[in-house]
Image 1: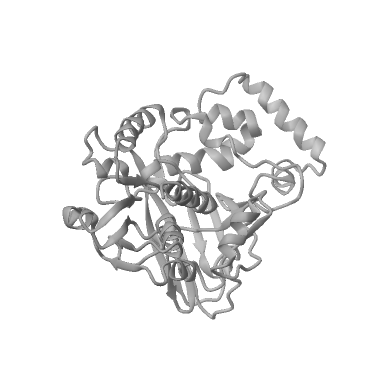
Image 2: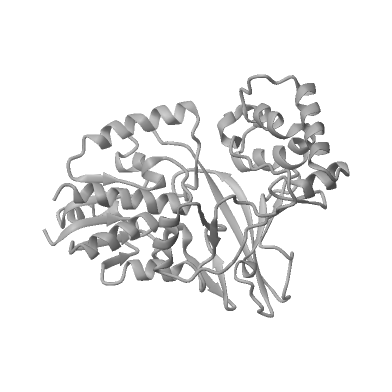
Length: 368
């Protein structure tokens, strides 16, 4: 066996694990079916603009240890995520804050906004939210739900809001201040020059094969390493033995425009049901670009099927039960580790991915 670890997937989890193991003197081979490393944080440069090829990625964390860790690979700019919502031409600030409430109701003081939301909650008569619609109304009232949540959410998930579990929206940020910063975390930013620099530094000195599908050469690849880290879809690893897990996927339409500024913001969400896409990303605003042209991407949520990229796990009761069956199989593996959002069937932010990878490294090191 030539390698200590075969790492299937060159995304952030696999790259972090490879970097740490390489640092400890372990020989790793990283493979990925895509022709580039970086997974979904990969950036493609167009007209000098770093385009987030698989959707907007903003690094944010409240964990100083993780922030310090990722800063060893790249310098981060001061980008602060402040998306806006477009409802049939009306513009609202996100997260829901005093700017939003002022635009909706003309109120100026937090107490005025609280009273309106509380009145709408009472009128809705929801005591124990049983689905996403009820949960959203109990948090922000009916006006905000109908204009800024319902349409966007139903497009995103391809299901009626009353059919979606309440937990999806429990972390909905609501502020009674005029602060437009979407995240509450202490640290956030975009790596100067894009995310590719981080992955390239992590994989420096690590054998890497791109455009290599693990399942096309599984037996051969397995024989090359003592241990395997698998970061792909857990149901695919087991050949969909119990059936496929459900995901939502995305279709992207990217355009280069011969103007210097298309929408004045990095992310604009379209919350009405008539607009087929959920948001438009204007990539140059992530890095305060001054290029004479701009690049925009429209995101269209679609139902996942085999061959599509899996983005968002549908963590309802049926899928969670199905995943638990696959997880029980994984727990019995002697030389295969599973990690990352696809193997864990869980949506992770980037700081979660890094932390999980570091925890996996420490657990492995306890074996030696």
